Length: 361
Image 1 (tube, rainbow, N blue to C red):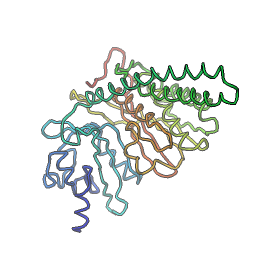
Image 2 (cartoon, one colour):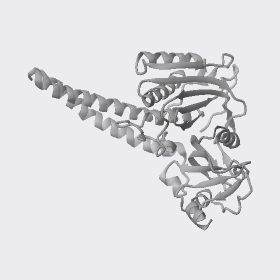
Image 3 (cartoon, rainbow, N blue to C red):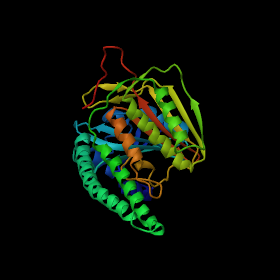
């Protein structure tokens, strides 16, 4: 037991062990520092009794128990008893050796400053990182344009056999430009142009685009709830989110396999906003593939920029998905194991005419 306790306290990531009803059994040393709370002060209590979570925690824990698979939720805000806030990526995993339904909850700080206990507003930190990335992208694109142009001019005076080299320069330069343009999208800090949208129209357009482009041999299945009300989103941005998820699934499948699109209504899921209000997120979209699952070493970081499980992958697609949904005060979670990976999006219902849903800062 002493060895187990030493190993538990040696974990570098804040971690809680929860019993079969969600009460705290253990809090490791990193967790005590991060949450500014002693283990003794939490024992036998629900985490929500001491801290505020921007996601409904207990239904998520129950979902992990029922599915027997880990759940990852990006961009969760934890409000400490002092009023300070911590931004984390949340991982809830079942303890398979436990017959009583224990789960482990890991809190992955979303920035180095937060890991040191400094309170940094998530949008302020994002603006700093985005501004630097956008500046670098702009500066790199300018010389790349000159390189591409020079290679194209050079190819006009070369024999056909040597043009393969200039063609390679042009192709690789364009690939880098496309990557930089993807980085620059993070610099768009304008609020989404939200309106009432039929979610099934978005899904159908995204599926058709995928089948005509990057997923011609993928089998698609639709499990739609036709009674769903409209959602309140930027339609173009939501379509980009779905396309990114479909492309991620198609790449995981290696071009062959099955993707299932599912929609349903789940009452009770709420996001707590920084202004003290809350947003109800009952409309659920799931994108599921029957591929090999996420690599275990990156499973809890898939929404972080430049994290990819593929060779030559940019690691920007899911990061952009997370950014767009965060801007919408929406949620995304992933549940992955071999043979089944599901990305689940939770969205707000479109308000009645004249009503205005609460907005975060």
